[in-house]
Image (cartoon, rainbow, N blue to C red; front, side, top):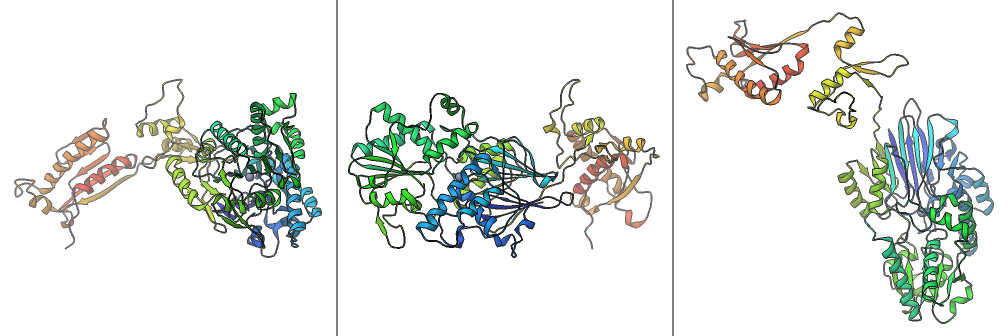
Length: 637
Ligand SMILES: [Zn+2]
């Protein structure tokens, strides 16, 4: 059984934190935390997950077997120093090498802004970030890791695209397994490849669903659209603000602008503000294997992130007259340079802001996307929003098509949607149930979902039994040398495979024919005969005048005649090849015999006698069910 409860990102975007309990009696129950994120929309307690759900007494290390971080975005790792240094979790933490390298920079950036500019006191310190990162184990893609040297708890990372170092994680406990995607992208972009996973057939796939209802148009047309908007605005003398996430879309959009400026000989100044641009470059070089082929090749010749037209931003440029383009972090306008510049440029209609596809609810970015004309940006300031607001879904999340693609790729038995908005999730949930035919849930934060995991034991099946089963399913037997398509002979509910399961020490269990099992065990073969009576209501025949000469003939003979006709028809239709014999006072289907009762007891005056051998149980069931249909019992008087 697998139990899942989101502490964050349940029917919401931001503060990703998913608790999974997985395992059974043989492996023990393992508790895993996927991501430990913060919520950008809040400045109070709600910004971190409610860890008291795990343990009221802060016994987190005993409760959790490990924490797994999918990528460096703060809504996936922002609460980690808080959890380890301020709540006391001291167990294993896993992330990929690039995530481990970049994560502390983003955390430190965020800490600076929160503590030094906003004056927040209940927050982690620089030293805490450092101490926290020392506890992290970095993993490679496709490397199988045994957590705590436990043979029953394995994890494995797969490439997720999205941002540098982003990974999906496969977790196996005994025969049960879960895949957690984090954020991923199924289409390669200008610097990263597409997400990819083995067909691991997990019991549960927990997938993000940020763009659950979107099917985006082609990459090329989105790029053209973006460049045209920027060009139109600057040629009218306007300023274009492009809020970006450091490391990610920023690099991709810069490459676009740089090429376009070069080709069209433009000289409008373009700036980049993120404090990490320089460092970003180093990281891409360092983790070149995580980028796509094109970037890998380009790096050999020149530095992909050395730009001719894009210059570093200086705070005083904000009041300069004339057209300009600025890439600034963060992407959701909740803090930092992008917000600072937005406040200055927003009142003027000739300016433009090009928003990323998604902003967490509560952020200034979300309000801008919502079309608000007056926005409260902090405790004292309101901003009039008159500039043009454009929305470009350049974000590196999978769209509906991509999510369906991933489901097909890894073939899960159950799907859970997280990291998305409720209404959109419900739409996708319906689509997944219909098209993939797997159960799909989307729990809210704090809501527990239980997934049953049937124990599966591989079994060898004997050829005789398999042949009989193929016959029963009316599937043709394979020709000699031909391979059987195993997907066609899975047991179906209507035709179960019946046999004897033989289990011996140190051997795979075998499913064989009953006779084979008896022979092997050197047991005497015993035949068991059964008998029963089937009563009928004589009125049924008198009323309908179905039988003539009632006075002269025993009614039971007439009823037997009737049964013969109906059964004969049913047999020639359903089981050709078996013959129904008719004697003077009996009918016979192999060992199944229907006859007149010998006893002259009154209660059997209106009854037929049925006998059969255990070998023909299925035939007897077939015949009895027909007789039950055509011969209703006598009503109780
Ligand atoms: Zn992300």
